[in-house]
Amino acid sequence: MNTRRVFLQKGFFGISGIALASTFQLKAQAATLVKKKKEDGFQLGVAGYSFVNFKLDESLNMMKRMDIKYLCIKDFHLPFNSTAAEITDFHDKLEQSGVTGYAVGPIYTKSTKEIDDAFDYANRVGVNLIIGIPNTEDLQYLSNKTKETGIKFGIHNHGPEDKLYPNATVIFNLIKNLDENVGMCFDMGHDTRDAQDAIKDLEKYHRRIFDIHLKNVTSATADGTTCELGRGVIDIPLFVQALRKVNYTGKCSLEHEKDMEDPLAGMAESAGYFRGVIAI
Figure: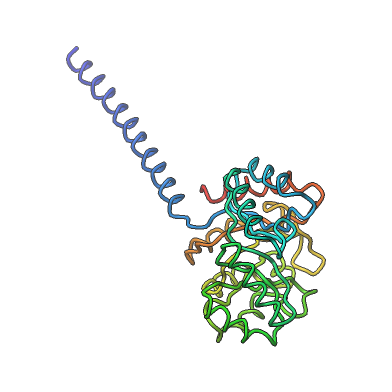
């Protein structure tokens, strides 16, 4: 009888020990996941061009439904000639929706005067980053401007149709000897459409990447079109690994061009997919 009792007790404590160990293991795994998520410095935003067919209130409502807090401001929501009062009202409206405008653009500049205007606009709006497409002959002037003002300028690549800045490598080779505040807004989709490796380019040029237009594309060719993050040819989990590897701390802003008349469903799918990937 005593032998049987001892056996049962040992069995009970053995099972309890396994269960307790399993509990500790699950807690440790959960703590590791929480720690990993806290270490991610990149933040989900929206590139304002995604809302080209919508008024500001409609755009902010979509952002609220997706729980996205950062917006790259386009001039169709806040015109270049906005007054100080209009800019204040604009920021108040964003704040009421829990949104922060973190940059302006993309802005096309065709002269040094237009570069001056872009920097004046960013200064009045109160942001420290301009996304733009300058002429190559104005790059030294642009470099002087970023050094003078401290405002960063991220040049946007637009794929094989863009004769100035088709991909990240072209941009980097043009700016590598300029002021460090001249960098790029890395459009990973257009980079891929120009037959480049977006993950390798992120790793190579991350020190000069100030902003990311987060998207996927249907093929790594000029015919590729924007699609939801989980449906294209770019391996998003590997891209996120690269973000972590280079300690990227800028914004990852969704730019959804698949359906400009009704972007919410596609953007919401991409936002959910991205959050799912970074939770792992």
